[in-house]
Length: 576
Image 1 (cartoon, rainbow, N blue to C red):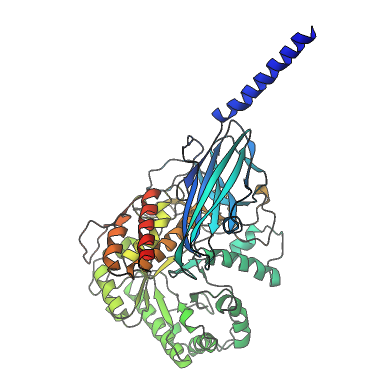
Image 2: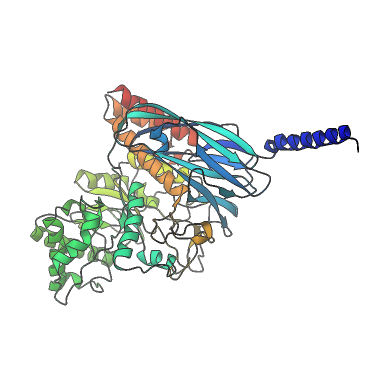
């Protein structure tokens, strides 16, 4: 072939290759969605290609960079030169992984399939292997409490296979903030499940156990979640006495201001500890000895305001509630000897009159329970009685679980929108609820029994009721994932847990509540907050006492949450 033709042919091949390279973006895309939105494998490309964040001091704000390609490929996300250090020095990157739902949660009427949820820690600038379908990377920025108010900017350089894109990041820091979230929480955390998840990679005892639990507790506290109970319990003798110094030393890393400073601590008293409890246990001298000594440890170390007891769960008879009465009176007697009044929490609701069936009157408890914690399912038919208990100086918490109202009630189910988690902060402020209880945070065992090992990354079915009911729930008792999971490149057995889109949304709601509280303190703020909160959640029903099962309605649109939050922030800043 003549030289000229060779050059023409080579030029044609080069032009063809260039055309293919330029055409790659037609099969690949980079776009941005809010932190409270979700990108599914079949989600088509979007149009937003900038990240705009607003945050208060000590707030966490995120966004998702969504990528789509023609095949499995490496994606790199890195900060461009000139990006502000306030953003780059306080940002983390996670890969949003999918879990496959085989058996959809009962009564949600949502399909099986792949749902985004686990947030796998990744490094900026490192290659992240992404699937051929649509997938996302989660960028989270933490604004330091003392950050100066103003607008900061940065740029994320995204390499998605053959495609590249620069994503501008704008962060507006408000001139207010908080040192810690103020909503009370108590989420059951299983240390046995954590140990099982390590699969023998490290000994779960002594210093290693302390290090692992510290990582788990720290991560949860950063999300406004207090683990229940902390890993500290005394070794009581037959008469109820124990080594108080040893117990105080075990509790100090979790309770003391020099440690993690848990805001609420369940004292070590359960139906099975320090002995198996019966209805007659409250009359045993050894139990009074034990509780008095526990309370003295809290009082002597300045932790008394943190302490609460939670012994009997959901009593379903008058006899059960009478047992609660005896236990609560015993606790108050013991803590009085220690110099304070320890709180008694009951997962039940006050009933001045009988409501039929097992819902009999229980006014005999009114002077003994300090924290009423009804099910969300019953709350809206108990409001008058709950308000009377609050007027008497008692607190009101609540909790939820997957039940027949799963389609309309907020919860933790993987299939439902992330608004289910974010709306908790708004609902709690609207209904003057002090705390949120949750009976399972890492139930990584068998869905029916809770025993053994169930890989939550591969099987999200975390709860199943026995037949004939057979109700199933995905993620209902599993808000976090194991931090040690080599299959996904998580090779450090001492690491804290992996977060989820749902846990991040729950924290967003707790943070939104801080905006609501601060805005309410401005001039005329109460009426303003009521108006703004009604954009997010509303209750178009009369309030009455009874077996009433009307529930608030709430938006699932992330944009509505953000708009309402921005209005609150401007109100707070304008009042300063």
